[in-house]
Length: 140
Image 1 (cartoon, rainbow, N blue to C red):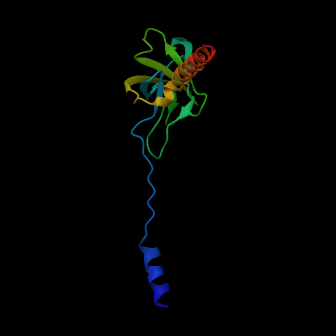
Image 2 (image 1 turned 135 degrees about the horizontal axis):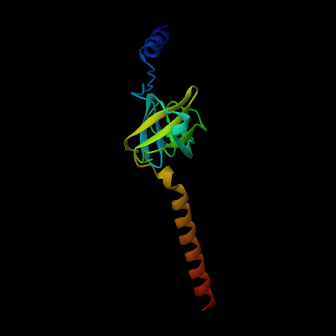
Image 3 (image 1 turned 180 degrees about the horizontal axis):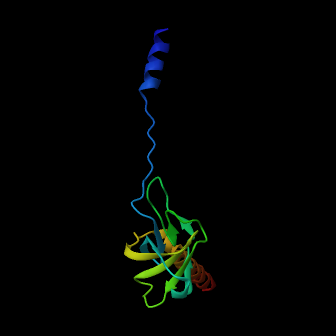
């Protein structure tokens, strides 16, 4: 009985904490640049070409994100250029009610996932080089 009591006390003393982020603002990421989505509508006549879309979602648990991501907008949400504005400063983001203005805030944190294709090609190149060198050595 004493063991059961201690076991119950131990189990009750263990707390499970759940952490989730509350984002300060809605954002989208395009080409390594983070844009804050403002509550300002962009007229259809002011829109330029489609320049990107949301391809990944930001992680609500640890705040990490990579690639063309967003913390609020679903996958496939389009980004368009705004006439008269540089896409390095301002883009328009598709919203249920139309298009919203998104302004550049800062560069996205470095993530190796953004460069996986480059890393894969380098590794493939090194592997082919080593394979070729071994073939040359064996022929001698």
